[in-house]
Length: 504
Image 1 (spheres, rainbow, N blue to C red):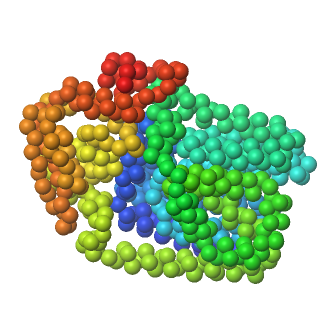
Image 2: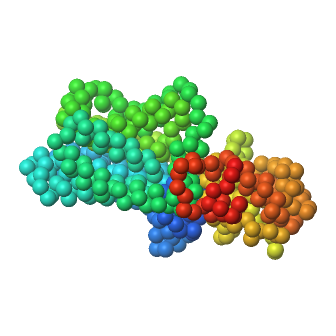
Image 3: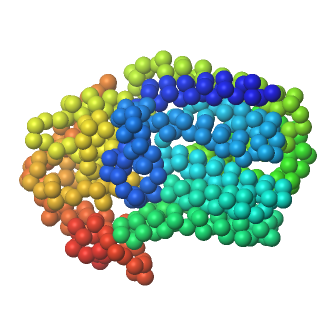
C-alpha cells in the first residue's frame, strides 16, 4: 500500500525543501514579490495580489529570512497532495494514495522551494478542481441536492482565490466550460453556482485595475506579448519541457498501458478536461511564446491522477514509483554536487554576474552605500535584490523593462528631486544616459568575487527633466490603455500630467 510510504516521502521532501529555501538566495522575482508584500495592496502592476498576501503573512509569522518568506512555497506540495487525496479518495482510496505518492516523488516537488505568482495558483486550482470532483461524485451517488451545490460553491470560491493569484486561472475555467458543454450539460446549474462564487475574485481584479490605470490587464494581454513571433523552436521547447516534467517513467508506463489510459480518459471526463485542456492551450500559445516551466504547474498534478487511475494493478504502480525514485535520487545527488561548488567555480559562466548579484548582494550594497546617498538601480530585478539586502526599498532610475514595473505606481520620483543618487548596475552603463537628469555625473567601478559592477553617481537630481524624458516615454509605451475603458485613478499619470489619463 502506498500509504506506508506517504509520510516518509512527505517528511523527506519537506525537509529537503526547507534546506533549499534556506540555502538559495532570493531570486529577482522573489525579491520583487517581497517588496509587494512590504507595500501591501489588493493588486499590482504585473499580477493579482495573492502571492504578496502569502508573503506578508509569512513575514508576520516568521520574519524576513529567505526560508521564512518562502515558507508558503515550501509547504505547497503538501497542500496540493491533500487536495488530490480529498478529491479522489471517495473514488478509490488506494488509487488516490498512489496519485499523491507519485506526485510527491516528482523531482520538481523536492527541488523547487521558490515562491512565485504561480504558487498560490497551483494550490487554489488543485482545491477548486478537487471540490468540483467531489460535487460531481456526489451527483453520481444520488446526492445531487444541497451537498453537491455546496461543493460547486466551494469550487467557485477556490476559483476566486485562483483568479486573485494569476490570470492563468482562466484556463481552469475554460476546462470547466469544455466539461459542462460536452459531458455535463444537464448539470449546468452547478456550473452556474461555481461561476457566481468565483465572481468576487474577478470583481476585485477589475476594481483594482479601474483605479490603477488598467496596468496588469494591459500587461498580461498586450505589453508582455508585443515581441511574440511564431517559431517551431518554442513549440519543441514546450514539448520537451512537458516530457521532462511528466518524466520518462510516466510517459513509458502510459504508453505501455495506453488502452487502459484511454479508457480512464473516457471514464473520468472531468479529470481529463482539467488535465488536458489547459496544457493544450499552453501548447497553442507556445507557437508564439516561450512557456515557462512554472506556468504549467497549476495543471501538472492532474496527470499523476490520470495515470494512478489507469494503471492496471499495484505492481505497475509500484514499478512507476520505483522509476520516479531513481530519477529523484539522481536529481538530489546533482543538487548536492552543485551545492558543494564554490561561487568562484562559476566564473566562466555567462551569467556569473547574476550569481554574484544574488549571492553577494549585501556585500555589493555595503560597497556602494554612503551617507546622504540614495541607492537606485537600472533594472527591476537588481533593484529588488539590492533593496532586500539593504533593508530599504531601492527604486529603478531609467526606463527599466516591460516586466515588473511596480515602481511606476510605488515610487514618487518627486521626492528624489535635488538628491545625490548612485544607480547600481551589473553591466557597465552609459554615463551619458544619466547626464540630462543631474548637474554632475561620474562612473564608479567596484568588484565582488571577481565580478565587476558599477554605480553611476549623479548629483542634484532634476525631477522635471526626468518627468519630461523618461516618464513621458514610459507613458507612451505602457499606459496607452484604450480610450473606451473607464478610469477612476492612475497615480502614475497624476504625477506625470495631473490627470488620470495623459496624452502619449
